[in-house]
Image 1 (cartoon, rainbow, N blue to C red):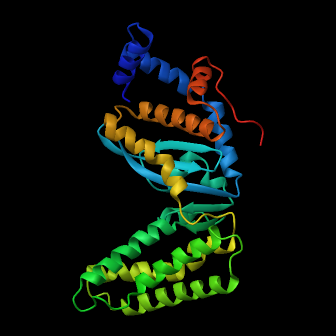
Image 2 (cartoon, rainbow, N blue to C red):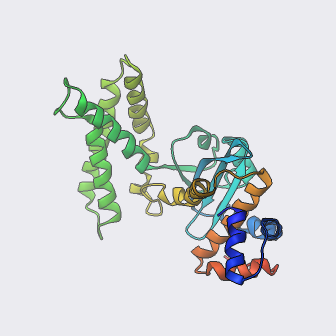
Image 3 (cartoon, one colour):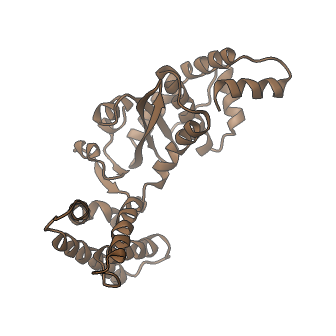
Length: 294
């Protein structure tokens, strides 16, 4: 909620007038008390074997800024920056020190960190493949015919079921689905190599990426720590988009930084089974909850 709506809610809850200025002051004090918390979380994520990364736009002071998330199953770090790329990633302070498997979409700046391994989001890939299949079904010349994108998407779904939804994956079945994936992307790159239209160029780029980065898309097959997609990373920033939808843009960059720090704190507390209200009370009292030693 916006500070004005929060002030109204608090006034009704406690039966005493509360101003938006009071809420703003409380928010600033709370965020200032989280420096030690964010440093700890930053270090814990950097040391993790697998972590999720994502970013999204946020309107702050009438300008588009970028919110970045780094997270694991136990920790969340959310930051805001003027830029979307490597400068902002370095400012967040995780990726430069991270040597595990980074789960993310196929956005190029993530590839500028040579010390880490990559696991590309297959949910993104499936959406892109579905768009190729839909266009093929609408084209009178190709409607009803086999489509390379359909084969690749089916192979990915089957692999996800085999790896994550069966007690003992059938090794032969896994090899067969990997072969279907490999053959599909090779054919896709070959069939779109002419790149005669904007759409065909886009499809060719997709097929080549799926072909050339097969190991990163299929890392979940060979490493049981790695998930099929980056949905966990996307969940970290969903609240940011919801906040903007409900209350509009944030008025200052300082306010956005405070919001992200408090959101990091609450998201991490929730992952440790700490009640939101209890976490906020201890934070307001100047003794924020801290995760136990790793």
